[in-house]
Length: 418
Image 1: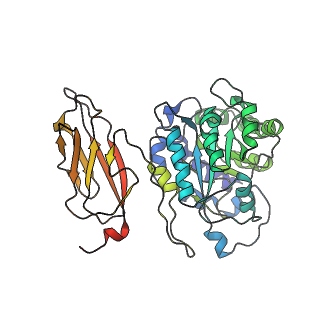
Image 2: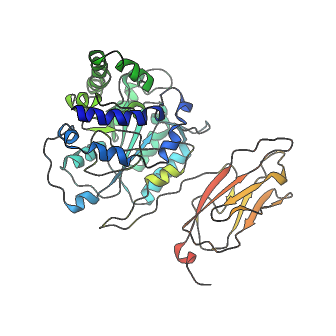
Image 3: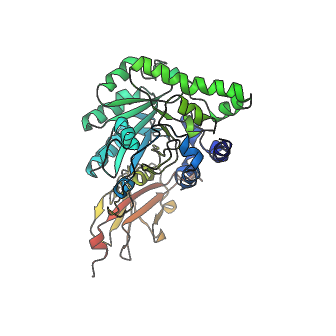
């Protein structure tokens, strides 16, 4: 056990300052942006797959022997928080329209959306699922889950999981009510625990500094009592837990096992297989301001039995652009254009366009139509092309935030001889 604790203490030091986000403050997880773009999830998973860790993992003590086909099966777990059809997107808040388009993209890609119960049964070796399956999770318990996301998920026929911290259920005008949650349970919604109070890492560390006995009692309440409350209130077996902010310490592991948690979810990106540690199941936290994360989440590398597949590009730009975000073009020499007619007092000389593979390009601005455009001068050969456009207003020294988007180039056209 000492060896296991040491491993998790190391991981905690790495994860602690980078994963602080809470339920009431959307802006405080900006640091998470860099974590989600990195591949550091591989190291923790390798470390945790030790003899000590597997012997104490939650769930069945024995599992059927894995076949090569089993090991090729991968699940991508998506993590959402808040939704709005009127507010500006933030890291933790995604527009309802974009969420709908993401769900449609999952369907268009032919990915199977599975329930938490199927996910757990697969992890136990009791059920087979298709490779490239998707598990949809939503943290905290915002009312918008019911008013914005649920109608879309219901229309799509997608099961989903809500990780609730019990203090927030029926917690005010912005929170889910018991009635709402029970209504969603009738239509494919599963319930998991997200603690009692959704503590920030600083709070957890302060409790830990009080000593072993006090910290153990604290974890018993946050992890153990939350499960009991949720099971009593919603009548379902709660065996999954999402670490608040993704923050965890080694002392949480025996507590999780004691209280019957089989799957514990992080905020570090990656695909899940049957051999992924039960204590650190990865999730792609889908941020409202970073479209590439959803694309990464829905992309799959090739295995011995399946070919690689591209993820979905679901983007929107503040102003109309051509080629449109996520569109597929068949020419390798497209004209890239942005309609800036809604921009007031733009300084034409300040407009900067950058195109992947070309860098800064000599963009042309038509003052009459208020369009900025550039025609590609060398045939595109990559599968994707990313563009950014930036400008500033007259008499302003500060540039607007870059408008970026990606379009796709038909692969056959890309390599067709001319």
